[in-house]
Length: 162
Image (tube, rainbow, N blue to C red):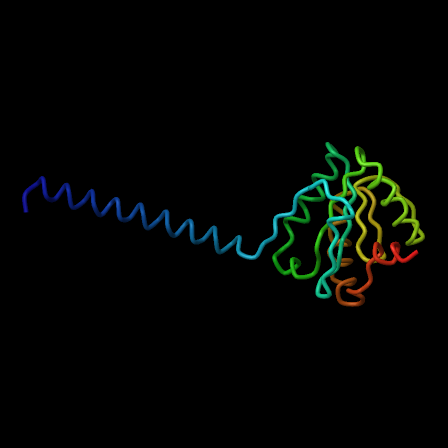
């Protein structure tokens, strides 16, 4: 084999190795993201709300531009894929949508609570106002508790009956 052929063979081997590394990396990324739900602060309304007998509805009232709301959605996105089976998230903007703002107040009143600020997260019959690092464990516990104990309870569904 001459020098030209050896160089060509080495170049082909290097290209194959690079392609293999890229493919392995892409497969790894796809594996890590499988099943994960990416939650965003969509401007939803009550017409978006659906019911799934297998999941809990969580209502996230937020304000456009609110840093704490962004932090809370980031936290919800960081939950392991195990949590995806527990709930559907409805994100209802309240600073520019009067109907959503009114709904937030009425749903918290339905639960015998009051809105103390945003974000306002309703999980079953529990209300979380604001967001800080020390709330993370309480939110995770509330999701699991409400899912296991009473997944059929939905404050919005109860509210609509009245």
